[in-house]
Amino acid sequence: MNDQESFISHLIELRQRLIRAVGAVLALFVVLFIWPGSGYIYDLLAAPLMSALPEGAKMIATGVITPFMVPVKVTALAAFLVALPYVLYQAWAFVAPGLYEHEKRLALPLVVASTLLFLAGIAFCYSFVFQKVFAFIHSFAPKSITPAPDIEAYFSFVITMFLAFGVTFEIPIAVIVLVRMGVVSVEQLKHARPYVIVAAFVVAAVVTPPDVLSQFMLAVPMCLLYEAGLFFARFITARRSAATPEPAENP
Image (cartoon, rainbow, N blue to C red; front, side):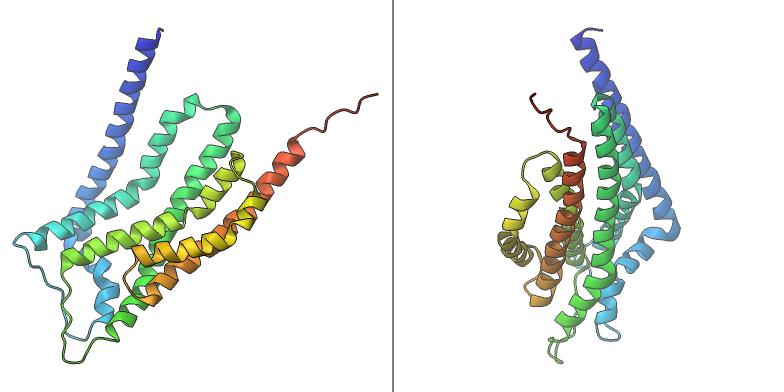
């Protein structure tokens, strides 16, 4: 097989993998849209905010088709998150034949771990951060104001926060990969700890709403996850050092 035929075969395989991944997301979207329904999924997503609002308060929709489109977008997001392991498996199956055995042994655990950590970040944001942040924000609202958040603005906020916490929980993977590839050493990362802490609070201030609690709840996990990455990177360094044979002494 010449280079052109090999390139075409790779494109065909890539197309097949993409079709399978997109097909899985679409199939899950249809299932979730039918049951439990897009309205129920949006209500579930809005539950942390609604629990912090005064009794009887509701969200509003300012657009004509917003009451339909926003729940549909939320359902698509839920379908993608549920199908994420399968989507990443398709990506893994496409690149795996071109990897060496030692790269496969490292790449597959990283794919699985990164998926679980990303989902864990979203779960942490939804189940813990949202409840604390919304209660903190609305505790400062004047009694003369009736909060009525817009559903489209809330969806945009949720997407931003989910991405922020999902990516934040990938920090240990990034640290391990950098050490494993020899880009930096564990000692260098230790010395960079003060700069990482400052950067964590700067990123949290940019990404999260302008309140101290949400910034603190993003920056602290970033620092802790950085330390977790350093902890596991030590074992990778130790294994690599133990696996490296010592040079033979000259007679």
